[in-house]
Image (cartoon, rainbow, N blue to C red; front, side, top):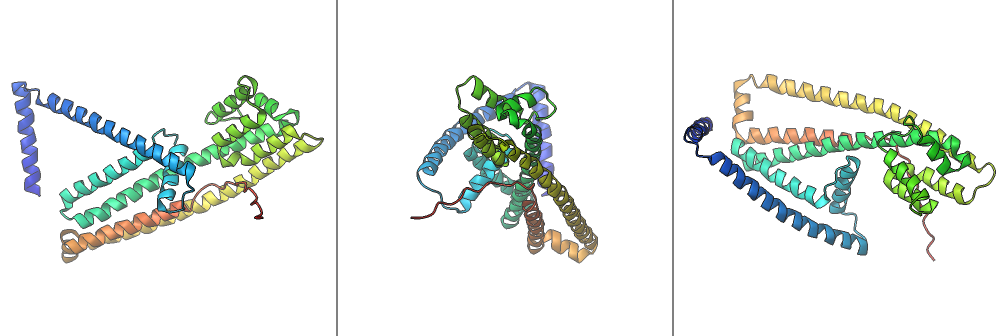
Length: 331
């Protein structure tokens, strides 16, 4: 392996030297060819994914999907893209994941010279990437949920004069509504005043944009708008109390999860340090690093660590109360 790497380095040095000295422009030609090839492949991939996307949308609109692993995967990736505000089709992301997975296996096989071990390590890498995206998505959702709660706390006390009037008053300053959700409230005002939307239509669209965290306020706003009675505006104050309770629970939960993460990292660090210390023993080092069973054990241990950390991250998340629609009685 070392001789191969040395030969590759020497060959590259000679190639770049001759290309520069003789002005062969080989590098620019290779770059142009690679760019053209990449654009062609990307075009085919986009057309293929566009067809898959249209078929998936038709299928979901006609047939109720069973709750299998593929539906859960689609929902997971879709939630990642929405929370991170990434405008890439789900099918394109799936293709990129598959291509990346294959490339990781090829690169690892080149260095480790073992397909099975490379496959296990590649799974660990993909789990780590999914975990990172999950953490980023969770943080983003928590920020949006807190921004929605702050907006509700500012709007609810003013709702006696009408929800639209209250939102317009709060929108006059940049203090109460975060820039992350401000465009949605601006669009809601425009829909009500200039685009001919009814209040119900505009509020439902705002609810879809802000998500389930806004369900309670949207439902009460529609009822208040069309059935306003004396004292009815007090129902909005319940939302302020509810937000305060949710904040308190989330703070306590965050403290517990931070402690759990610290304990996990400390335990993992102790195991890694013990493993590094054990490598000072010659026979153990040769078995764990140079033999196939040793590499297999190392890759399995890495997989266990990644899966354990990913499972712990799945349990973490901000509290969000969701409104459940009552089930209709069967006749």
